[in-house]
Image 1 (spheres, rainbow, N blue to C red):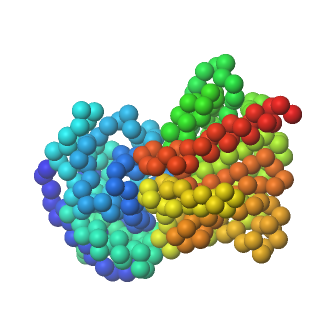
Image 2 (image 1 turned 30 degrees about the vertical axis):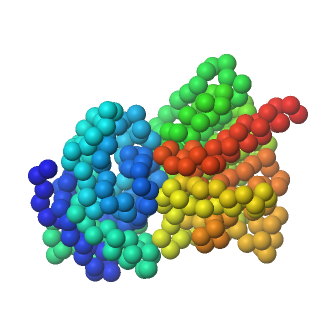
Length: 364
């Protein structure tokens, strides 16, 4: 690889040195770290990273190259990519190119040779912060870096038009609202005998009702959930349809806000394939894949929370809310990713629970 020096300048003034690959332009982004030991292709193509620069904590990235069949979306939505070492000689029978070539083709700026161990510790100690990838530290304007904010995340990542997956005569029809959906959500539903109609994020309640779906899926996505008042208002209407709802990640947060349960930003988020989660009913623990920077602030002492839903899952690292089962509507939501591609499959059964919810509703 032909490389030239590059730098990451954080909003606190710290500078990390590396070598530039991919696109060569300067970029400002929110700097976040992901702890997965594999699945870098799924990370790179997860729309939830819109507006962010991803730091991989695993020291060697790209050793199995680029495999388009493993992508989670039509294109990468992240702003930049940072690793300790990016392999330039991948080895895999499915490989269709190097990561450096793919990053360049998709105009994603990247740094390799960065001290990601120290960088991750800084983000853990001080919290997620903004930064700029540039040729020289003097190119960076600290005030502009601090002012950066991820905006229009859902609008920028949702599909432009509806499309359908699965068999026409499938037992169940699911309307999947795409807030920046990972492809494997629809694949898991199709695998369970569902026909899935993927809809743009701003589809109205009336349009969904006209489809007569058996269930509604609210997908993952990027950004601050509170930045989507139009979607939240529409969800309040959708809940009156009494159609079973399952929500994942951003969908989980949006559904909470629609029910009067607040959200807040985490210090450095949960991004990786090793997050332990406890089911509060069965007391069983699962290892989960997660990618989010915001949390649902479920407080059992708050009547708004208590009247709306029961706390179903909790994160064993920091006790944050990981899942809710709603009381007055047929709905459940999880903060983690049960489709987990790549990642642990501990919670794939949640799709089976959703199918069971649809079956029960159909039999009434």
